[in-house]
Structure formats: structure tokens, C-alpha cells
Length: 354
Ligand code: AQP
Image (cartoon, rainbow, N blue to C red; front, side, top):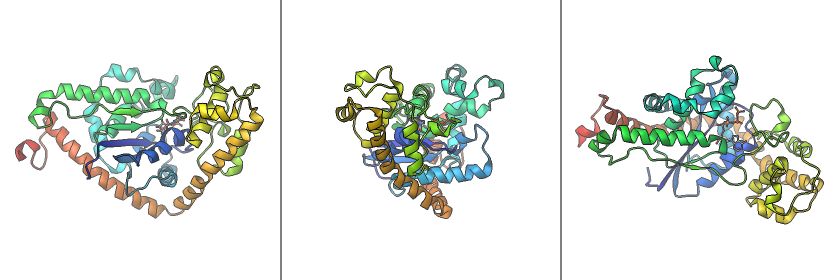
């Protein structure tokens, strides 16, 4: 592997209905990260997907669809490593070690579990509860330094940092004895930000745009055609006031703020710059401009996704190649972790080699 200064990891669940929030908050930024001096790994996190029930045949299609979205958005599988989690067994293996490092109290604080489990908590899968520990393993199996995600993942990223630090502290002597200095795992930097870190529902500006929203009008799907995109933006909830000329004027106006944020992220500019052009405009002027921009940006991605998903053999080959490359890195981490923890493993331990 070439010597990069950064190692970037992120993932998307193949749970269907990939939407504008996933694109602007995550996938579009994955593409931008390729231009940094970084090894990028982008993962279709299928082990995470089964923490809630998935129809097996549909799941296979959804894994290929997320992969197609990665490629159609501009991720180059020769530069980045594109793979699916279940093909690299080290994710689950490291998650077990981290289950023994993470504390129950830490997981009890995770708000996403509370939201997703709802009132029927006793009936939620153990996987759903343990999701953030597996996420820490996804990231740290590659000792990733940077993780681009949407704002909803902030708490999980903090847990990843806590697990890395506790592992480094618990095993400090063994880490040094095996030649890794004072710390084995990096304290990963979350990359959350930009105007679309949290894209909101088109029907309710206080709710996150989400795959599981029962209203299809609440989100723009990456597979929507031009007519559907334009219609959803036309029908998006707004208030009766014109757009303000200053960002401060978007406070207390969640729907207006959301649409301005979406415009800014699609155009690659700031909210301030959007308001410089549209301050004082009515939504009857702004919405068609936003619809045009969204269609121009998203329609080519949808078209390319359709072309790619028509050839599942090609997608499977991309995933197989990426998984093999990912496993080389993850296996090195796991070998070292086993030595540090005190397991006896097949093959010479790093200590014996020295
Ligand atoms: N609304 C959003 N705005 C910005 N970023 C978002 N992300 C998700 N929703 C938004 C980011 O997309 C990446 C992949 O997300 P995921 O597939 O792992 O799962 P998710 O967060 O569970 O997606 P949903 O849509 O929120 O699904 P449900 O309906 O199940 O809750 C992540 O980086 C995420 O931050």
C-alpha cells in the first residue's frame, strides 16, 4: 500500500431508499476525499443492515444499488477501496474484542438505539444495540484517521474514539512490548460539516430526511427521475415569507433553512452565497431554481446507477476486488490486536518475528 498521510473510512447501509441526505451528507463528500492525500475505503455496511429485518433477496439488490451509487457518484474503485462489510470477516472479529472493551453505560447513552428501538425495546435485536461497537470496529480495523459522516453519526464517532482510547490505555504495556509505541489505535477525526451535514425531511423541517420515512415525498431518492425530483421540491413544505438576505434570518425557519442548505451543498457554495443571489426572493422563484439544480446534479447519477445495476456481475467483481484489498489491511490490524490482547495465533507473532 502506498504511504498516505490519511486513511479515510466510511460506510452506507444497504437498507433501500438511498436519498439526498445520504448523498450530500456522505457520498458526495466521499468523492471529494479521493482528491486528498488519503487512502479511502468506502464500505457497504451489510452487517449493520441486518440489525433490523431485511428480506434476503431485496438485501442483495440493495447492496448492489449502494455500490452502484458510490460508482455513479464518482468514486473510482481503482483509487478508493469499495467493498461490502460481510466479505471481510475482521470487522465482526474486532467487534467482539471491542465488545469486551466498551462499557454497558456507554451504549445505554446511544440516542440512535433509543430512537430506532422505540417503545418496544425488549424486542429490538442485540445487533441494533451493539451497532456502534461494530461501527468502531469498521473504522479501527483500518486504523482510519478520518471518517466523513452526516451529523446523526456524531455520537457513534465519539464512542469509537472512547473505545480506541480505552483499548490503548488497557493494553498500554502490551502495545509497547509489541513495538507499537504508546498507542495502537488512532483517535479518529470525524469529518462532519458543510451545509448538508443534516438534510431534513421535505415535509417537516424538524425531522431528518430518512430512508424509513413512510412518506416518499419527504425525501428525494437517488433513483428518482427528473419529474419526481421537481415535483417533490415544488411540494416541499415552506413558510409564506420571502428568503432573508442574511443567514441569521433562517433561524426559526427550518424548512427554508433546509432548502437553502440543499441548494448550497448541490452548488458547492455556502448558505451566505445562496442568500446573496436569492435574498428577498419568494419560494415561487427559489423552488424552480433549486429543482433545476437538483435535476442537473442528480439525474446523471440516477442514469448511471440504472446502467450499473443492469450488470450485477460487474458490481460483484468490484466488491470482490475491494474486499480482498480491504482484508489485507484489516488482517494486519487483527494480527496485531491478537498479539496485544494475548491470544495465541497461527503464524509467527510479531514478537517472535522481532
Ligand atoms: N438526513 C441526512 N442528512 C445528512 N446525512 C445523512 N446521512 C443519513 N441521513 C442523512 C448520512 O448518510 C450516511 C449513511 O447513512 P446510513 O445508510 O448508514 O444510515 P442512516 O443514517 O440510518 O440513514 P437513514 O436515512 O437515517 O435511515 P433510517 O431511516 O433507518 O434512520 C451516514 O454518514 C449518515 O450520517
